[in-house]
Length: 137
Image 1 (cartoon, rainbow, N blue to C red):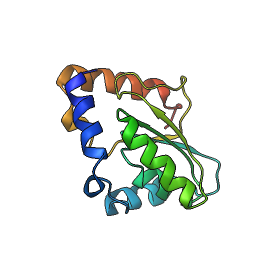
Image 2 (spheres, one colour):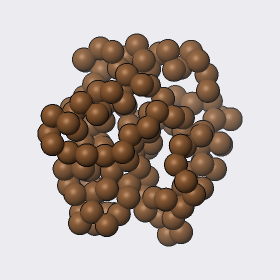
Image 3 (cartoon, rainbow, N blue to C red):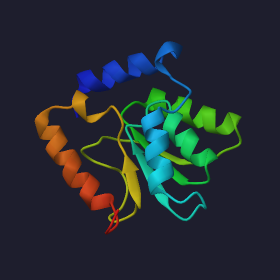
Image 4 (tube, rainbow, N blue to C red):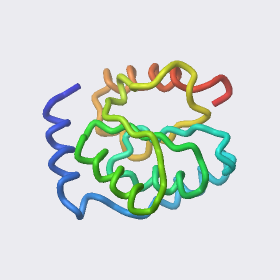
């Protein structure tokens, strides 16, 4: 992973103005259309940042997971979950090396992430997404 990008995201997530609290409308619509809200499906937010979509999914009774390159972002996501009495599994990691097992997730959201990556990393990310998604996910 490019250390320059890691440093960039650590810097951004250290500033409150770069930690949005509310989920985007497109993600809300996608989640409502595609996932059951009964705790039976595992959904990964790949590039979760400070956790706005992880918090939203956890609040909607989805088994939420998050991965972000920035440890600063992960810490803010954990704090947001804790403040709201919610839980999710969060790990620091890269889109090109997702730190979860094969065929683990029913779905993945990756909103506003891949266009920051180099083409080689996007190719690796697609391979990793396929690896961690369950059949039909």
